[in-house]
Image 1 (cartoon, rainbow, N blue to C red):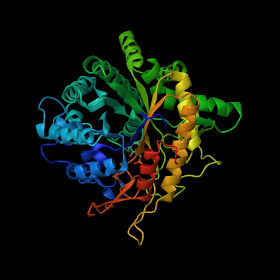
Image 2 (spheres, rainbow, N blue to C red; image 1 turned 60 degrees about the vertical axis):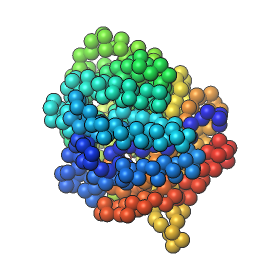
Image 3 (spheres, helix red, strand yellow; image 1 turned 135 degrees about the vertical axis):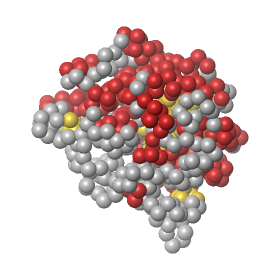
Image 4 (cartoon, rainbow, N blue to C red; image 1 turned 90 degrees about the horizontal axis):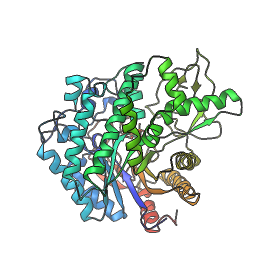
Length: 474
Ligand code: BG6
């Protein structure tokens, strides 16, 4: 790969930091959501995480030893603004100063995500969070604070992580905060607010930080038609319009996909959209520097009769293969398993070709650079008798996916960097600690009483050699 290619790793505040009420941090919606028993595996929550808040220095040392070029992490909005707006918590900002400066002094480029799902609970209580347009202004004030504070130190910014995932889980399936079920009107309104927040933040970054590179991260699971039955080809179109292009088109082209929007409008789910919102979307799409792609799996799309599969299934949070129910939108599409592909223990298909497919699709459709902001394998890991973690399965997964990225580059895609999800193991939102992604093992489990000791896995040393060879030795 080119010498400027950014070999990275990603993490988030809620999943890694812990210290959830330390040094003046306010509660986030996740702190409150997980305080109700039964919502996550083993009732795990982010109070301890993997204690990055106290162990950041050792973790950054390990990153530097590995040769990491970029560390992508999110900032906890309520750590910086405990009430979501107004009073700044200087201790919170000081923590991120240490992380940012610690990256820079070790030759690691910091990349910041402004919003990775941990909304200040105060804003949820005050006006219902993202359902109210006030949240756009509060988000923008928070973004401005960070842009000005980190000016000259942070070049790469992500506005919002995976709006498609947290709004679907938050308003359609009640699996994330604010735990609402099948509420399509707020779902579409919330997403419109998020698009406005993203667009305004992109334009603000461009105004305040002329050298910044800004994008949004999107969980892109490309759709494959089940077969050449025209009904399944159309199911694929329906899926892409409503589950992928709905977000990608707004981010990259500045408007909703027309047929998808017509469908939402006919159903009475779509908010009224003033012309100036669309003009703003177009301006931000033009200004956005790259598309952040979080890639985990592809999807199969098949015709779904009107009385067929629903969006709400039984999610696999235990790692017992085969429990994930087929979901879909009645009358439009459903997503059955792919008979050509194996899956992880959490029923996600393993499909490196899908990542190449995703990069090609985005490149030809939007003509923008891509940053792979997350890619990784959730797996059970164990410490073996020699005290090490021999995660050859993870090396195989990452090798195939990085090879797919390299093929996409050879085909003409402009890919700026690639981030493994994750550097250390951390808390999986719903799945506890046993669904591990890290290159570095953390002694922590659902009891939340682990020693938190770090042990590099085989994949850590493998990624070290990949980085050193700039991707030539996989
Ligand atoms: C992405 C999120 O959706 O997937 C991460 O941005 C998340 O925060 C990752 O952890 C893996 O998902 P999960 O549910 O396996 O932890």
